[in-house]
Length: 191
Image: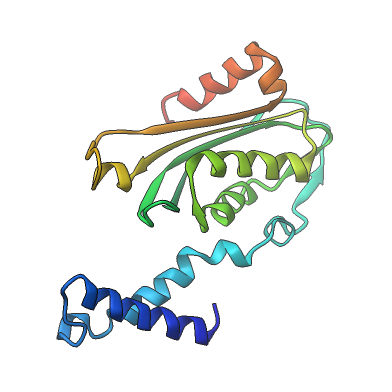
């Protein structure tokens, strides 16, 4: 985000504080607009990232044909409907087809898409599609579990609700056995 955009956000937040009945010149709020602008730079940094730079050539030729699973990857994002946070865990599996990706790149891909205004359903598909695009594996599975502040803080106010979304591509979609193996692996107790 450039300096002009940051200045615009600072002004907008000052106006927002006034509109909700606050005094933006009050001591505790003097730096709030600048802090919010800085936060939004962080929350929305995914718009300035792309898949090639995120993966950074960390794809390696490997003969492995067995399922690879990275589970319990924490994420947070902002709901595009209310601009409130949603957060939780993502579980990703893929079956290589001659190539593997550096394991740290999977959380980076998740973060790249999560740092945009989102809905969980789209985010789940974007992560699966990105792994499919860069690896061309025999299958990709993504399960995302999220807690949504828009459901917990307002509206229905259900504090213990959890949304689960999944995307299954290739062998994960075609084979119940493969899908069940993935589900078993992501639901095992932690070591």
